[in-house]
Length: 399
Image (cartoon, rainbow, N blue to C red; front, top):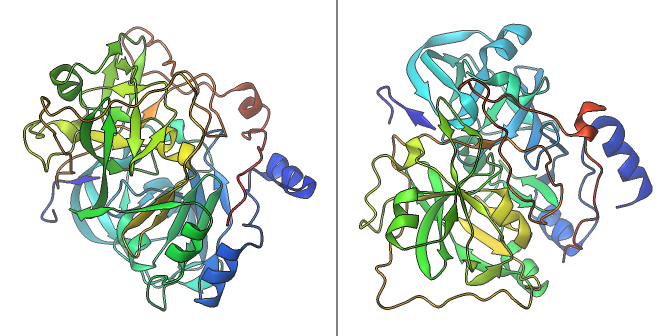
């Protein structure tokens, strides 16, 4: 999120999800046992609309707010509508805020926070901003705001992509047992780099090293088109509108990579997007510290990724690759760009698709055509139209 102010499965679980959209709590496992012994609490998550993005209920001053878990946002933001509904008062002017999940407000305010908690456990609070979300209707009726990295990191959140997991521990140090527990279950570990209030992770796309911003609030991975052109990464023309924060990108190109790797683990990715996001505006492709990718669920979910935000680690589980998939080695004739976020980089995170997948299987990316040059509105899938939920799917067995 950019701030332009002075601050830089069991049957019962299936029924529960179908009726309420709420995901079941993680089943008992060595991971749950290890984190429980260290004082971590598991929180129940829900999906945002019919998409692969997770929300958690946060109690602020005694009121419940459904917050998108957003590692791409530096700060927690409440929508003005939700703040008014529950009587959360602005304290003083913060200034302009533009970025994550459609937030766009020239006169955002600090919220007057007395207490924050999740599942009855009091949090170490970060800054909370009250602001307007420009395209809030695209987020659905149950969206109240975003839970950003300042709060997530301070409370040592462990976030799982598939299955969705959310553990937190505001009172003690980050987990010491997570690494050994996950590695014994076949996961591989890599460190993620903290920069400008968010985490970065380099990936390999067709032999080119690209450092990306880890964004749990994004559905589709996006690569800077300057990078795809410079290194001849194959793209084809897309049709429609990539709607993001306070910008809309017409006809973003679709990347057709030969091979993608995360933490040296191949990922079965058929496609992602290439678009000139605001996040990339100041990125120098020859600068190894420039952000040129936004890493979303479509890539990280395929490896059942687990983020340890307190320790700055990611754990990924290797999966079987199609026989035809080959991952090119990094060529010595290619420069190796590495990408990292800038303090003023926004993000564009919503690409409209007529169908969302609840599993790591890679759906074809289809953007809704723009109507008369205006922003495309969200078109829920059939399951979403019947109640805002999708059919639950089986999850990998945790170690």
